[in-house]
Length: 161
Image 1 (cartoon, one colour):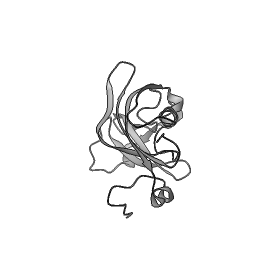
Image 2 (cartoon, helix red, strand yellow):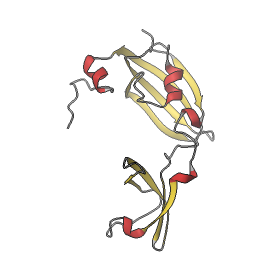
Image 3 (cartoon, helix red, strand yellow):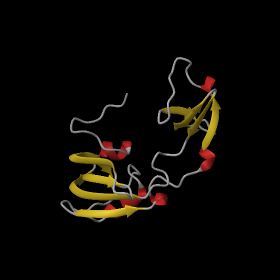
């Protein structure tokens, strides 16, 4: 079976940046996604299309096909009062915030200076070239429920809260 839309694909992978630093790794057969449902970054999904179980691939994904380019408009200074008063704030901490259209966005604290906190709404990997080494462990047809929900369910089904 080859990877195509409406297939559940299990992969093992190592993700590195251009300096050969490991960013992420999954080598226990637990990473599954529904192909064609935008569950993974576009560049990786495109590179996996048409591949077969057991194949190994190495692929470099440019930011535009990964987590996007960095957007300085997503960096802003906010007053310290916007955060819980008892919360210790440190660079690297992440919080949910409300975006311009009321949508939930994840922001990362860049700096904390006196009464001002600079937050960055870019994905932490925005602007980063991604280098994947992937082994395709398994491919199967998605269930009707997985297709309806747009994501993979575990071996005992899936229960939404």
